[in-house]
Image 1 (tube, rainbow, N blue to C red):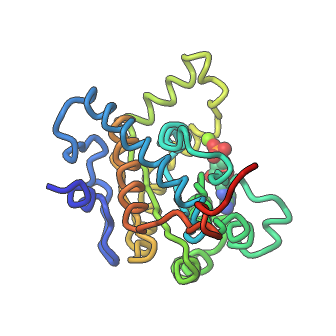
Image 2: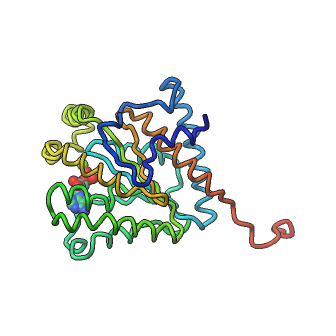
Image 3: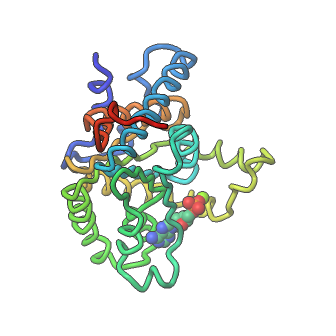
Length: 273
Ligand code: AMP
Ligand code: MG
């Protein structure tokens, strides 16, 4: 089976009703061989990503937006470190969205997001995104139900705008289990190099696990479109998660059929003294 065929099982079809309990965070069926071989394959794909990103940057035509969302400890930082390892920093940018500042809050919730979207030739990775405005904001009742419910259609329209204007959008939900989160939080307590990541707030959020899962289910059900699809990535295993995300990005970049631009003039006629 072609790799692309195997990837399709993780794609949320437009309108598909998502029940996350039916999606196994340990699933790894697209990779039949050993973890060791997956790591070799991952490094090959990583080289491909570097090549395509160079083309993207040279061609100055396409814009790539990659959205990462997950429960706490879901692995967003790990994906950014591993998947984008080696790309040219001149053409790739990470935008991390934290609790909005008072200036950001005084505008509509897409204001700070739109400013960070990619320009031509650029690849931007959203570490959290406008989806926080229908996730944390919903779970903590920071706005009324009517307000967050209206946001699904704003978001679809916003992403349609970006897509119509030449942005290729890929959205990844890193799906971990509640047990896996417990282990990862425990590591943040136990391992000195990870302690900086521990936040007491994460324990409070963990108590709201079911509410977050439900909010994610709505996001996945209502905002996966042809022009901005969601992929549900089984993320209990880091190697599988990294391999899968890299593969989807590389196959998408390949489908853009990018080319290096033609030189301005006939280079063979130029003589350097
Ligand atoms: P971290 O990504 O671990 O640095 O944490 C960023 C924090 O900002 C998380 O707790 C998010 O839930 C929070 N955050 C991000 N966007 C929003 C938003 N639009 N409204 C409220 N909180 C947000
Ligand atoms: Mg955090």
